[in-house]
Length: 133
Image (cartoon, rainbow, N blue to C red; front, top):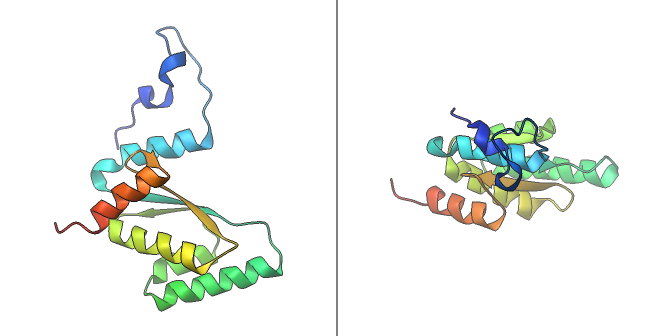
């Protein structure tokens, strides 16, 4: 993985003598997904609300739905409340993203793909997940 230091220093603030930069969580994950873009790796950042009975029921239902759709590895990691899921296969990432969105009201996810986030990442993932190569 080739992660350039320039990726982590925002352009407007960077100068030749700049020795420090402030980063957000999103900056770090976007840089990671950009570095992994040649391998078509998708990153799902899972959002588990702090627990109450509804969250546990939603988590259990989501795990069952993921198993039901053949996403056994994803189901296992979600059951363990993994915070980041990295996918080597765009189609599996696309399926997992949509299953999580469709089958859980309490658990959310953010997609990072090819250095993109949000709708742009979803469009790029959709193209790669459904390409015929």
